[in-house]
Length: 251
Image (cartoon, rainbow, N blue to C red; front, side):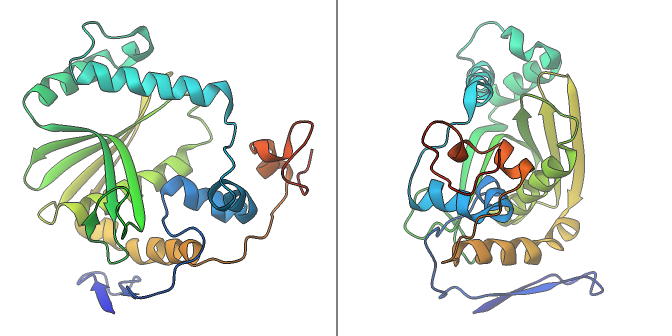
């Protein structure tokens, strides 16, 4: 067992005990999206991650995947022209492309962490946490930008996306020990708007104990009760169709 302690802001939650020998449950690794799903309806997580039933996210998700691939290919120099889907961020993507050519940008980061928050592989035997981001810009040894692309609506998702950006910042500080400033940017590609936040190491790490505890709760869970509601079931495909998998789904 070890302590991850923040030396500043003792008025806030500052210490978390990291037990590295805990017995993990049926879902031994977390990501922001799986954690969010688990906390809204644990049974949905059970179907997806334990029963291994692929969820149908619909055409909007497929479109988002395609646009993300276009963005990656353009920045990496695999596309000559900027696709129309990205043109609301023309100057930003051109800048990313130039910085990528100068080896200042990492694309499609697949970050794996152990339960002690050490870096590991995405699919390594000791992987406990996964953080996936679209672009990581090294400004200098102590400052970086973390960029995530979003398609679809922006309004109404700001709180969830801000929380996701905070997870990116926390992961960045663990992955890069010399990093002191993490600038998170959510690019709403369909709207040409951006959600920006700046975290110092101390500011972001204040929130790490709560994130850690939430992740432990999910990765040690052995019970997955359903939480049917109009909102939860509206966005879940497991209760839809002729032969729904979820018997608790609300129409």
